[in-house]
Image (cartoon, rainbow, N blue to C red; front, side, top):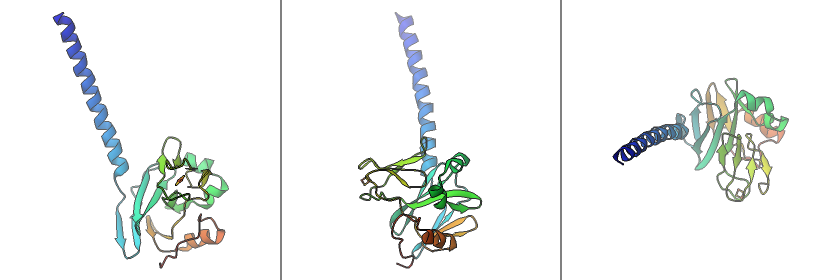
Length: 183
Ligand code: FES
């Protein structure tokens, strides 16, 4: 009897230790995802340093009160990209990024990114978007909007329209009526 109790106690302690270690790893993983990229906010602009950005990790920056998603794509994502996806890629220091206002084009909820399937789901009414924030399932009517941006080396300046942004605007791939960078 006491042998059984001792064995049960030992197993309980071992399971408890495993759960604690698992919990620490899970928290470390979550913290990593929550760590923001270094950024500087100035009148109407947000400058984001991408030199430490990791692939397939969604970063959310705040720009003019709106969430802006920044996602560095993996080589696999780039290889599988459609022409529409490629047209919306922001190339910074040789890597392809998604940069978009993180608001669903249906009614404005904030979609969440699923790093395993590499797409976005809007939990409000079930719309989905691919890794270029192009709508792939109703009721989202449009891709998520690409905000005005300028590239300076490894930094991204949100709120200023650089040549890469203007090219996308001319090509009509921004997703929606673009915001006035001076507004
Ligand atoms: Fe996103 Fe409705 S607000 S699906």
